[in-house]
Image (cartoon, rainbow, N blue to C red; front, side):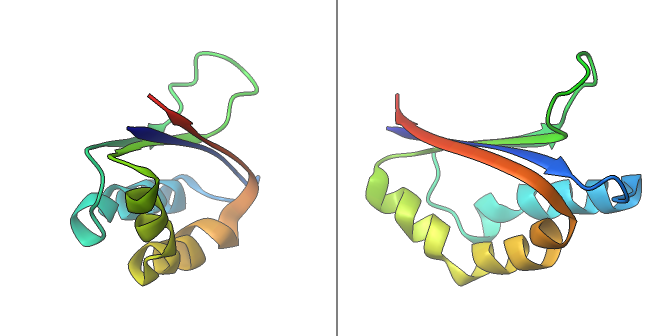
Length: 97
């Protein structure tokens, strides 16, 4: 199994409404794109200063399923519409579980 973890940091001018809409759009990816065996996305709990603002964790049965998700036009549309316009920073990793 392959785990995909992404940490998003939003620009200073990204308001709370936009952040909620972005998390909601990301949260629809399992239904709209699929391919994952587990999926979670949510805002940082605010317990430690300096954390990223949002985390996404998705498990895929294999690298092929991850690549299909990553290249899916519906996934790319969510990234283009909701993520990129407000992105200050992003880190990601994929690893075997």
